[in-house]
Image (tube, rainbow, N blue to C red; front, side, top):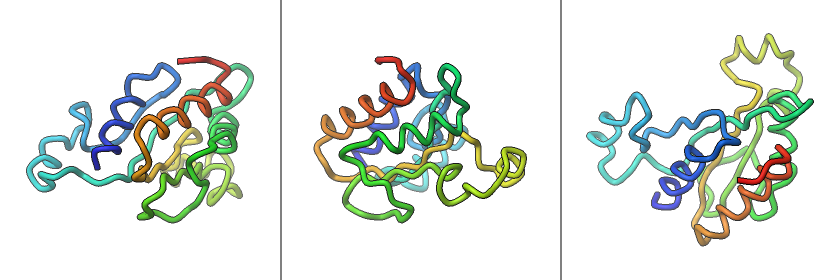
Length: 139
């Protein structure tokens, strides 16, 4: 969970990220509840949004991000010791239109991450290089 907290804070501070939903962050609306009911931390699974870049939509930028990770595995399951990422709009919910994604509560830019036990510097390196590739912008 230490890695998840570090990754969430890193993502929240990155201008290429639109939002981060992790109850371990003070900016989350349920932060106080998370601290009360999960004193050791809220776990390692959370979501974030990659900002659309250039001519690409949020859906396209998220898909490009997912296809650019090198350390993280692109898998739909969670609970592994390895870092896993998925972009529902281009995988599990690919068949939905943009309007249907909204109705389903799945933003086009949503990426779900299950942060693993790898060295934190390796995880951050991978996310950074994938974001640079997807957005065309360095941190």
